[in-house]
Image (cartoon, rainbow, N blue to C red; front, side):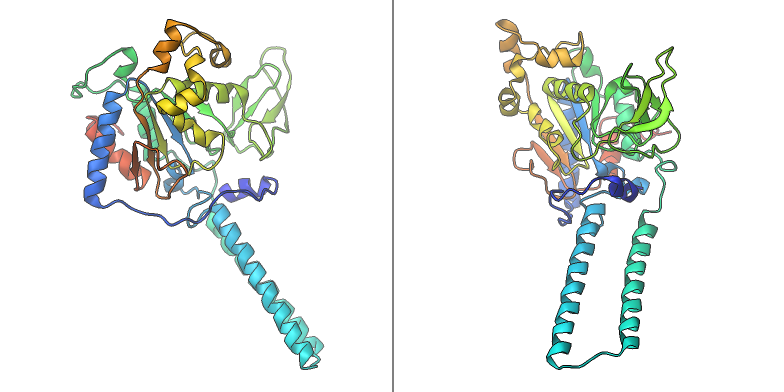
Length: 373
């Protein structure tokens, strides 16, 4: 699953901090924070959610930097290998110093033992990650987010609606995940989802930009030809995968849309993401007045009309600019078990499993117990 995808990526040394300890809020603190989060969502007229690997772990998909993450285990294996090599080197030096010549059979037995240990380690890794993206199902968090986008606030929610947007608790999702679980959630339209790092089930036509969602994993990576062709009219362009490798640029349309949506947001909710991969990690700061102005977003056209790319490049002056530079900003909220580089400036940091937070949050927002039926 994630390990298979990670193995296809090119070698890249700077994967950020891995294996940081996980922390949990106390029961009392968690209850208080969820109430605060509900109030923020009710007060926001435009909310964007940024999701990471942590929202998919309950579906059986391992994350990357957690205590048992793909890259955490990779670093541990590298440390073990380095330690083993040091031990072998020290052993050879000791043997040579005592001028003892090993028997050929002893050398063979030692090599066989090393091979068995390495094979066992590979098998353990394979067993842990021998799951399929195809069979993975959306988690409670995936379903809750889709519901918050597709469903108006409950009538029991008495918060004042300032405009049409405020009738909904969530307005756009941005994901760094490649697992396709957001796409498996029927209530979530593609127009409300920006996919930054690609989708394991999606291939696209670079000529007419048509996307094809498959029920099987796309085997290539790095925007390479998949061997299939576009069937949109007479296009017949060669389809490519959408999975980014380390050096690949973010998809222009989704990236521009993400920036515009975050600039429009009064509140950004970061769920299950370490916020360590840039530039996606820094999007959350657009929900702060400082981050908004530093990005020059007060000069962007954030209207709902037109193409997102044009909106982000178009400059506005005078009254419109002044309105945007002083627009309401509630900040960003982080729900993650590990610390992130953006914790210090967050309006709220919640240390709990994302599914637990979302389940209690849905109740606090007034959706009752039957929203997930």
